[in-house]
Length: 142
Image 1 (cartoon, rainbow, N blue to C red):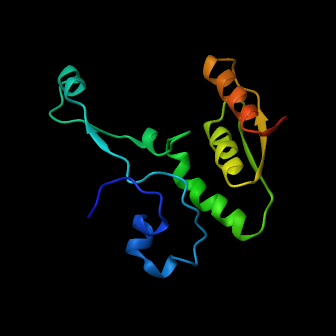
Image 2: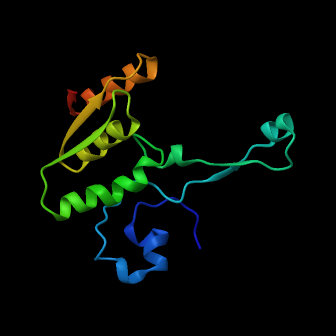
């Protein structure tokens, strides 16, 4: 089995394990999977554990990685199958999910609408809001 990252639907473990879901479970390939697992030797020694590993889901996308990409493959796949032209998501002002939705919705030709609640002002909140705007999200605060 190859461990090279791929964006194909066929490579997803859920479709390998349950082939009857392919074509029935809406899915659009967005990420590069599988992501690598990295051994953290220095941190292992520092905290006194024999072995410590991290799953590098931050490498799951060329523009934006993280675990959000995995669920968006199914959520946006469903939106496309239903013929949606817009998608809406809810979260705090600095929501990583809202940003990921804006990025991948745009990539698929969908308009992204983010309904956002207040959040303490922090640098990452500002950056996520700017990036969401850059990727075309319509931002609303409630």
